[in-house]
Amino acid sequence: MGNIVIDKIDNFLGNMEEKYQKNKSGKELKFLYVTEEDEKSSAYKEYFKKMLKKYGVDEPDKIPDKDKKKFYDEVDKGWKAKKETD
Image 1: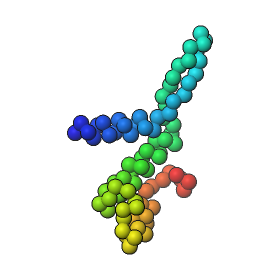
Image 2 (image 1 turned 60 degrees about the horizontal axis):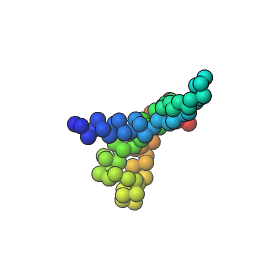
Image 3 (image 1 turned 90 degrees about the horizontal axis):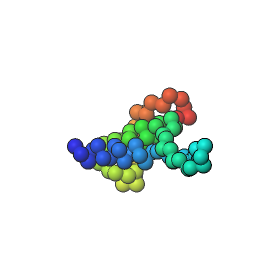
Image 4 (image 1 turned 90 degrees about the vertical axis):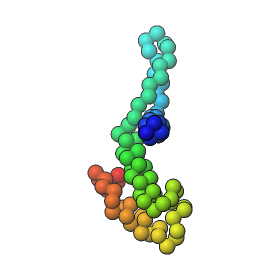
């Protein structure tokens, strides 16, 4: 259970970006933020990982050539984007 939580936290932090801004006294402050695009990307990555797991692999290159078209067709069919560019 603990590893799952750590993986989710790592995933979340991996999608964060740093932004620096100076305050009125000139001290530089560091902010972490997640953009909407990052959240969409993260959701797709999680979905893609689940599809890889369904095929018993951890990366697309390990899918047998005879199954690759089927895999990508399933990924396309199963991913519901808000708009076609997602």
